[in-house]
Image 1 (cartoon, chains in turn green, orange):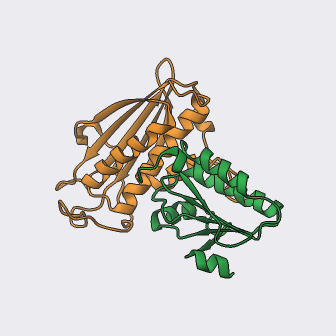
Image 2: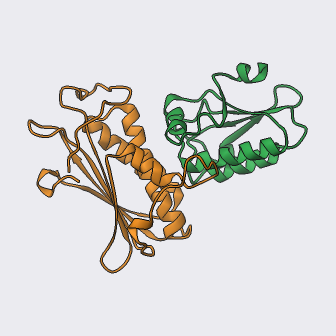
Amino acid sequence: MAAASDNDFVRTESPETGVVILVPTADIDMSRSPILRSAIKSELKPGLDRMIIDLGEVQYMDSSGLATLVEAMRIAKSHAVPLHLVSMTTKVRAIFEIARLDAFFSIKDSRQEALDC
Amino acid sequence: MMTPMSRSKPIKIELVSDPMYLCGARELVSSIAHRVGFGDMECSKIALALDEAMCNIIRHGYNKATDRPIWLTIYPQQPDETTYGGIEIIIEDEAKQVDPSTICGRDLADIKPGGLGVHIMREVMDQVVFEKRNGTGMRLKMSKSAPRPDEAPRIGQRSSGSNPAQARIS
């Protein structure tokens, strides 16, 4: 678990016009998933070329995190904005598989893969 | 469930129902699970099962109140000549009582936010039992058998990946 205050929990990056990358920097559990949810809702707007959620710094996620991402995917689809999850650790990937959600999301190994698709 | 005779002395803690303390409970149970022989992935999943159970108490039992009690009891069991060892986790609360037979996960094909906690617990743990406490509140008992002694990591050595299917200790 990274030592991240709630204020620093989600980093927002925009490497190019129309692309937003959100980077949660610690565990996503019931205490922090509302912060991620708020960040997603703030950035996920119609007209965005794509949104990428980089999970490379997330060592743990529970079902509240999954619920947040499911909601994000729904919003993205309603706005016709592609949403990609990237850089998942093995442990985080395992929870997606337990919940049978690994096929619901666009999961890429890297940011570049998500930018290129 | 493990019989009382096979249990070692428990670790007991009392928490309040504030989500910020979930991480501490996760770290605790993960450390204990590793000590009795579970690999890194299994420790992570056991911590997840505990987390899901506590989230359900906070969300559904206590309606997100952050000042209600949750009691956590962990029985670690080291492997020996006769048993594979394992871990048993008991979580108790003072939330409203419900009929245990009504506690079930949702249909996974119906993809929507939420409703995954019970499914995750049952996928990860060997046994999951809900029951009413005497008087008030609920009790959840979860248990999982550890790897065979010849598959368990030596002290100071971590194993990786999931473990093969184990015999149940009931």
